[in-house]
Length: 223
Length: 127
Image (spheres, one colour):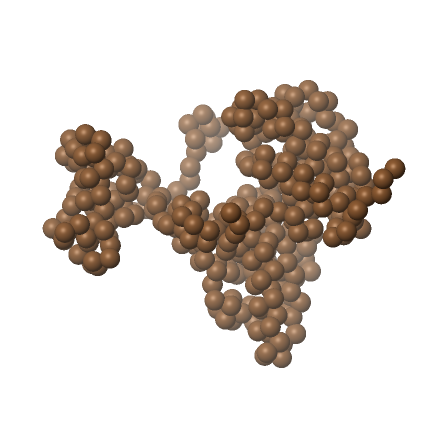
């Protein structure tokens, strides 16, 4: 899932300080699961903002609401009747949710309250690890299920590079070399020939906003 | 009839939320023909050996339907049961299909919203 982390209260406060009626909207999806922007975090943020604004002797109306998912327009409709009572929205969703919210309410300023960090996995409660950079060219089939784009500092498709040093990365002795892990994994599965298959370089240049259409729906959306 | 212990539940607010959506909710509940055609559109239903509790209509009727029937007079235990139906048994993937045009995800989302307002929702900070 998408992992995010709440911004410092000062940063959020600075972005909304010119507005007097503020609606904080949580997201019941990924932001809720990673404890960054669900119902509980909405209440916590509003409590912190309340204290911060009071310290500045500013009077604000702080509203709160949580929708199921901010990345689906269907779940934003229920905000239509509420938003008119506010001057701005603080969204606790990931970047996708913030942008869809801004699209739904183009006349109302929308401010993010979290930083979208990664696509990752849940390690422990409140601890998440990045696993995917959504590069759009998955090579996990050849790398033993270890992503070189995410794990390798250089993101090399054909590794290891010359900087690998006793199992660690040249940028830090605390970072394991992703390509050594890939080698070990493939070796344990008797698939070392996969490491010899040269992967074409990623076409990073000229990247544009991507839209995903699943194959059965292509006829519906593409002519 | 045994009195319902509604302690900790703002029943007035629940009723208020139900009234806000009364027309659509009433129509959706009336329209459900219990045909179960929605069942196979739910991947959780299919993945759970076709357990009827995962049928979208079951989840819809035993959440918003229950709240409507009880006119919002529910206790925490009932809200907990509704939570199981609308969160544990539903990913809200919005892929369920109703031949009569009932917007089941919208109804489930409404039930979730009402539960959340009463402090009943999944806690991801607990084991």
